[in-house]
Length: 445
Picture 1 (cartoon, rainbow, N blue to C red):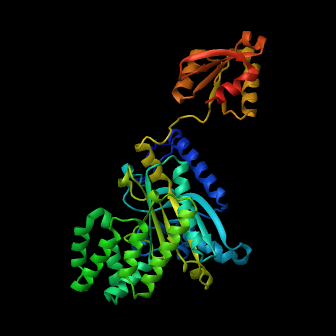
Picture 2 (tube, rainbow, N blue to C red; picture 1 turned 30 degrees about the horizontal axis):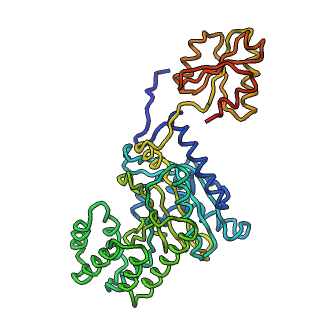
Picture 3 (cartoon, rainbow, N blue to C red; picture 1 turned 90 degrees about the horizontal axis):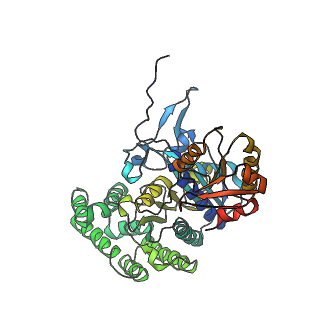
């Protein structure tokens, strides 16, 4: 058989141990946060019938779907995100699920977009979602902000901002500006969504290029942007926007909801410095109906949003025929891991084991097996060196290459006295101790 060149598809990656170890630790921390807030795990297939996934996210997103015919000639697609599958589950299982239904899900999604390794953007990547289905209460929206704050704290991020908005403000803006066409308003929102990238002058230029947008309408949109970015406390900024949108039903309601979500988030312990009411946040997916969130790292803004989401009260109804309120927020794991690596906030490692138990010689094998077993029973991750017989120097080099912090050496003399030698590979020192003291010495901070 001819040799096949080992290679990867562009935009995909292998997750080697030094990448997977910090990722797995992060996923565990995030999962603990989700469960602390009372969310239960759910999983759904990576592949769905295409009509389940299509028609919900908007044309720009659907250009990026991996869609194909399977061997049964069925029209299928890989999931683009996790929310649409959740909506299908809620509609399919109906009253079998409690309301509110609080679920979290972690898994890969696929998008055929231009990859950027530097920004942690791949065509296959992981998302971690929490969603609350079945309540219109804005306490659920505020809880998403609280979860966002808790996740950032859990993974060691101190400098971040959760920007949140309400899509009703854009409907109010549409009413105030007298923009009759929904498609024209969608173009306006796409331009506004680029504000962080192209700044105000760039947005103004794009708005000028919209032939159906007259000068008065353009001026109204720009005035809205200036108010949205006005440097003031959140409550004052919301009040200014409410005054600007006074007389528009959706605008007034959206500002009232912004204020309520902010107050509830503060009561849930979200510090003021970590939240910003930002009326320029759009979110690209079509199904959002109310509150929307985007979280950026203050020290690495070029990575964009690392945690985002919003309220989508009409999505479940596309499957059940009955609208059901829902809100959720999602962590982009690959982007967050890449950003934290750049900020030196990610503890790297090539080994899961805290200690390598060496095998001194054939006569000491049983004693080494006993040591490894007792350490594992004590909750210590212990790897037993398997490729024996091998010189001790080779075993120590193995531990060094894998960056295992401790090595246990136990020969015939130690076995006879019930002891072992513990080598600290980082501090470059060692000490001999009784077997029952090993676990405590390794676990000691």
